[in-house]
Image (tube, rainbow, N blue to C red; front, side, top):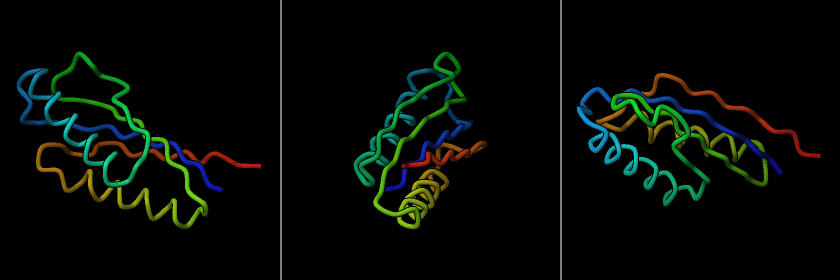
Amino acid sequence: MAFAMLICELHLPAARSLKAKRRVVKGLIDRMHSRFRVSIAETDFHDLHQRTQISIAAVDGTPSRLERLLEDLRDLAERSDDALVVRWDVEWVESE
């Protein structure tokens, strides 16, 4: 079994208010969760309207499938018209 924790920081250049930011972030989180069934939450920069951080926890049966899942998540984030990925850090968690 393979576990990974991912931290993704995004820049939202068109967000002029926290309401606009919430619309973009919620949409991205909902798409990632519904398509890939990962645990995901906004974890930082709650008071800034053009910056956010989301954290994702993912589990799969094999490291290779989990790696592919992480690539698919990144592709989805990078295809967003409203957000630019500025940080993408993956931490692999060792299983016993």
